[in-house]
Length: 278
Length: 278
Image (tube, each protein chain N blue to C red):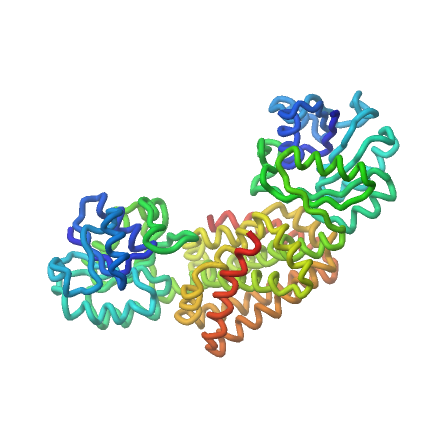
């Protein structure tokens, strides 16, 4: 197949590495000519450009995967809709779906929303790695039947398990397990860094260990991605934050009242419940 | 040196592996004869017993390290104080210090409080590993001068960097970077698991990925350790939780008001600040 990747960061670059290895013909588009050159050199794409008009394969591409920042997906799709043949399938990798998929399907009938649940701390084409998607889950929001099947096969071919759901259910679920963690983790870093006693703050920095490192990881990630989560999934995230505040207040109250039995029961339950999510 | 380890879990067992490798004579005491046998078999101790009276080296031991659960430290110390020679130095590894060190020094003058900041997800003697402490920080609360030096040298010999501070400062610092993360992480698991819509909860479980895994790790750990943190460092933890609630409410308010500039600034700042703690 001829496959296009728009946006050559960690996800776009890693997908390209897998697809080139699978002997597809892969082109890439990035805002940076330097990134295109790096992607070619590491065999993440066969050729690339900063401009769709410079892609000779564009009109007969089978699938285009939009791996841009969230706010660039709809503008890119509008541009592509006038350039590709009607048999081209277009998908995306955005971590929100309800604010994208319905509009995208209006603009382009063969658009199918995807969200490959894969990532790591580092960003950019240089962090791209072969096999990043292996064994992970990819959400696909079903649309036109044949296009849906092709998109599912694409993600399966790089080792992913498909989970089909509606854009709204996707956003409600990721508010709990992905967007809420970013906000509570950011609040942790902000809280620790705002200890007014400078010596104590330095001591806390010295003593911070694996527990702090793990709990703070997603709150210290790409700020633009965190912002996009809040902007594009605002209502679900606010709901999750409200419920979270209630549960945290309950824990605090138990500690205040020295209700150790209740706290121990909760901690024993969370130790068990966590396994259900892994 | 002759070194005794009381409590043969992850920390006691790992310390034993390092100390045996360094050619010290190492004995162990555990509540379980089975654990003693396993510790001998894996070379974490040379010999062990469930009873101090069965340790022939006891009266001429140089250092005893108490690696028991927090609530066993003072009772063990009282028992040992009547059995060892006055030249024996005793230290502990508890993750709280203010509720232990002053009382312990009253019971036994050559007691020095330690807290090696090392650990991992799994617990027990079977999780013990050589080199667990390498490159990590160990808090030592200074006491009698020669005993303090000996305890510092012990932790340095297994690869740790020493950080000296008072028991109170230790507890205030770990409330921020260790005990607060446990509670916010437990609240996350509890919140996600309490989604009332069963299908949505299952979808969230399916989609949970590395972000959830990391943010939930310490909240899904040993419930008795979490309880001990809350019981033994209650006041500092409550203070940390109160400040945390204020910061989280601020983030939520910005999302409600769509004050995206403020949220982006905070997330950019937390991305930078996190580096100070690693």
